[in-house]
Image 1 (cartoon, rainbow, N blue to C red):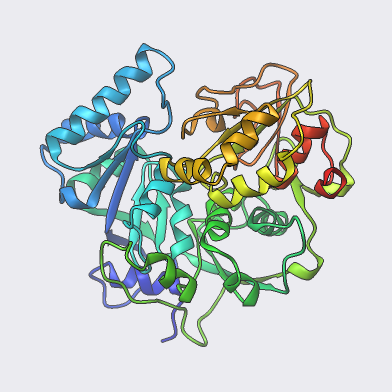
Image 2: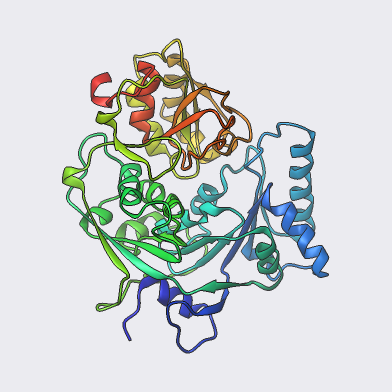
Length: 419
């Protein structure tokens, strides 16, 4: 029977002889991850369950990233709890100055490989689909069970095939591709489904851009977004992957719930307007909107690719006097590479705040929250009311070129008009 990529991964990680869409199955985990927000809650749940050990310390990763650096005594205590628990259980632990944002760290450190099942105490665990893994976010109680037993319940999802053709034009990135998808599905059209990205346009994307695409699959309501592993994946994992892997692809004749076509030849830079990721417009159609804050970074768009794009705009220019601009490398590795390439100097000269790797302002936790009445243009992944601070603020989502151009102009503009 022909199967989709997601079905093949799940079948290989359960004890069932056969599975069908909608089946509720127990799935074995290759990696279980949590952070300084979800981890301590999961630890309490484990204690209430009477569980004293994790199922396999080498398959457990804890990353302090959401309130890093700590904004107050409460968040500092959360991080201390995460560190002490990690040391006591002998699991992988990434602290301040040594890691970065969890999803980026896990990919960079070689924990994620094609065909793996990765669960995390964070909804954007779908990011790991960029490398052909089944990555999905769980609540802290389910993470507690996964930490204890190495398994979790999963409904077998249908798959939406996203066929990407053509070639990206100037100032179009992976961010625009996923916004174009969400514009078609809406924020709930992918519920109980997987987005599988295929076609020559998908294959031409770098790993950094695949991360940006997979990162926002959950904003369509999807379980995950996944790219079949190819030579680009293999080259990235060469000398990096911690475990052996083999590429997994959907079988010819596999059944898909829907097919979406994305033609890159006709795709312009896009922007998600307040207050939903699915409220998508062409940047060219919404120029002129005043912006108070620009934020470039997060688990999907804080890569060296994003920083290079931003630097192209900022080089020789300055941030508008009415704008505060914050740039956040997604990891210490990205930070170091940006430093070596001279990008951080470009940002400082332009008048940006350069932050340590952190989730921070992306979820309103610190390092750049918004006041009532303010408008932000960010490369983050959510723009719900109150997401980045005040419920009376507005958040717009776009790629790094668009965000940087707005920082220079003080308003939403086409990057071509700045360069």
